[in-house]
Length: 216
Image 1 (spheres, rainbow, N blue to C red):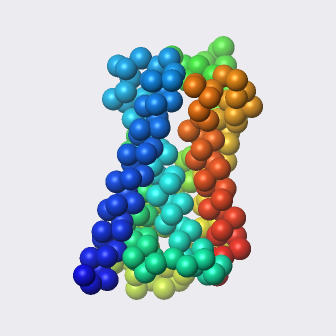
Image 2: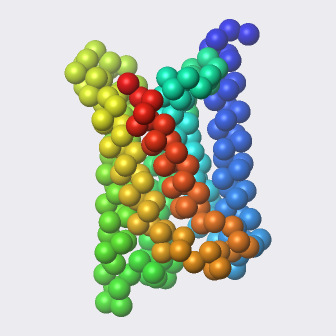
């Protein structure tokens, strides 16, 4: 089996397992252990699972290289799978953004709205972090486009250590302001299961620390 086949196989397995775990966790937390009706599985819960899948895949994409730089052995198959993981993570992030815009209203996310119908401060900060994170990830995804690879200044900037750290920081802001209030009340967690925003935040924080010290 050649190196290309190994990287494709590694990426396919990682993507499949990540999506199965993320969507399965969302179903377990919101439907089996929680009060969300099954009619919301096709959109509300699926959106949660897609969001977690995106964060996991993007964390893997950003962290395999820096982890290897820190002396933790990472196989060639995993290193070569980063492009596929990153592009899939970005596409899932795009789906999450579109689904969230369709769901975002006082009936579904009442905690993010004031009585007069305007967004709360934390909701506004979370949305700002999410939008900026998506725009930065979109810019990073452009670096893989063939017609832009000749622009060395753009590629050097878009793949630089500081750019990626800022991109990850925006994502952390989005997760933090989206769910930190729920993190502080573990007695209210469905079935004792941590919120998906907290799971994503912890994983992304670990990835951020790996990049902070391991990315050149």
